[in-house]
Image 1 (tube, helix red, strand yellow):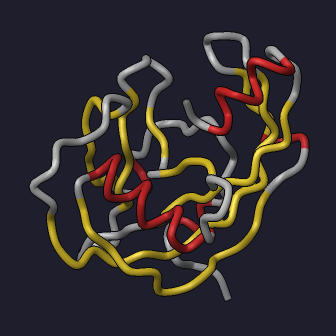
Image 2 (cartoon, helix red, strand yellow):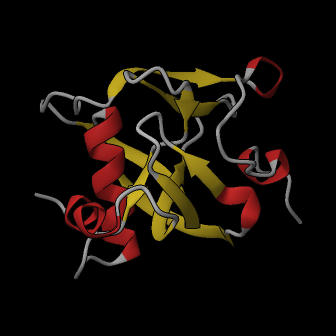
Length: 147
């Protein structure tokens, strides 16, 4: 049973501050890799929670591998995001407020392991065709236009 599942047994659906990570992965054309959730939640960056004892860098590489099948390396930290705009309610009613460390990652290979059960599909999107995301990451950061 995961750390979050154990916490949920104690606090139910109450708001939980959740340290997490997300990956910005772009292809050679500058398109952004997104994961379509099997749960019907839509599209998101490869992302997830940091487990106890895990570094943020290890967490983002684990999430990228589990959700996309890509092995990757961290190139940079693009920012840390949180606050009321990063609150989310899951279909189950569980409420979270994410504190997200956003990493720029580069793929280094493809794994033969199957994708996790959360992933319906993965796809690269150009900015003008990108679907809405559940969390309001700045598009300038996602597409590399920061100063």
